Length: 316
Image (cartoon, rainbow, N blue to C red):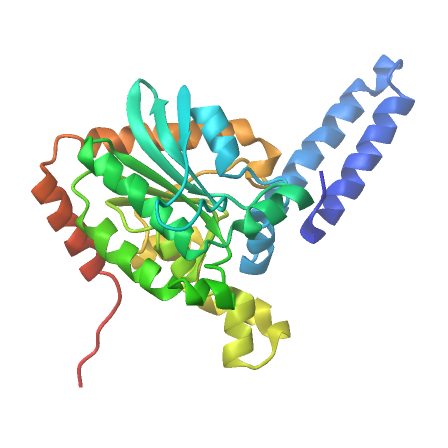
């Protein structure tokens, strides 16, 4: 597993502890010393991970071993039947969706998938949705509404695909249509940001009743690189943009953009995926339990009020 730059000291200390243990594994006299070293290592990890800046947390969010949508489906669903296609143009493999059973309850899962190696990243278009991906997501959402099935939408995308062919097939229209239609759906919608959630690519399947966000995920109107290129005409200013955008969970919780922060293990989801799967599953079931008895009319009205309250207005 690749280590991040801020983990260099941890890696060095771990190597020293490992060598010391190997050299003295048959000598009980060093047992207490080994215990002290391991305790110091735990303290070092706690200190480094508690002092992470937004740029370092973004690196955790983008770690190649971080769990993706398919990993959540495999680990939190008791059953899953995948559904394909937008019934208009093609199937977009940047979106994985289908009917699942979680804890005995049926859900429609709609997730953005980046891929985990070179081959699958190319196949999934690095998680960048084309218009048919948004239409596929909307088709599944409408199907869920028809059969009164709650929706779980997992967000993890660097943004909608910016290619010319996507624009020719109506990229902007597809995103706008999803914003309108997801706002009107008469079934509970749970949104969970599991990694990157940038621009309309994320929001196109990200309108819902409750928005949860993993502790080291990042959610913003634009990527830091894109922001730096536009505001400063210099992509090297991405660190400044990462701080200015306030896309970390704590910031967004304070601003009311998200409703809950879902804890990750020390160092990020990739360090112990099992913990994150358990936390996400618990979040889904707890939130659905609070929404399941609301009438469709109340659901839609509450959703409308939720998004109207976001942001700050200032009058002269």
